[in-house]
Length: 270
Image (cartoon, rainbow, N blue to C red):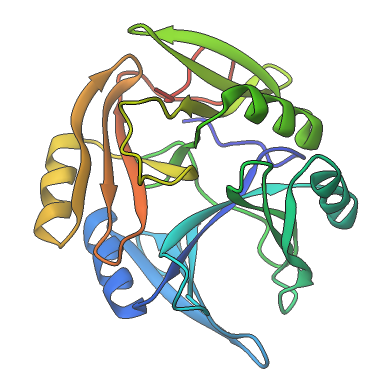
């Protein structure tokens, strides 16, 4: 199994904003076999860390409570940078927005929340006590992140300018799919939101988790209160499904046809 490198431009962290911590903890721990522990920092409130297996296992995600009831439950993908403020300045200069300024979160990490030039939220981070995801590209861990965008040309331009990513296109069953690369390593993808996408579906970044049986996972997720957006479907990289958890946060799962690795030869994107 390949671990994602932890250099600039790479996925650093995924974070769930939930209106109901108890429901989210129960759902993801039941679905993926995760454990969870809570960090409490004065002035910052509680922050939950999901881990593989027991609480001493590697970190696979974080969770915080929604601070604004008007915001939808969601997953946020954070990408690593060396210069937090410099990257925020670049994001703004390229038509994006600073939503939450660079913040030292109790020494755990320095993070900022931004929006791209099409209004899609994402995060940037520098490691602190939390060095980043402790497990990737293995069952029950993130193996891919995907941007669904209305304008893929603008997406290519923006993220290339901000992170220096290189965009390569592939034809999957007549649909063009963009893979983001750092050097020759695949770090995520971008899908065009064409007329087949519901008009109310927001453009967004979505984490994709590796599961050993996509159909069984989707069925179990439904039993636990999730909704299925894209039923288990065979795509070139594997068997794939998009889901919405019981609080309303979208995520995806895939059973890859081959071991997904962050390299130029294979990726679990659509």
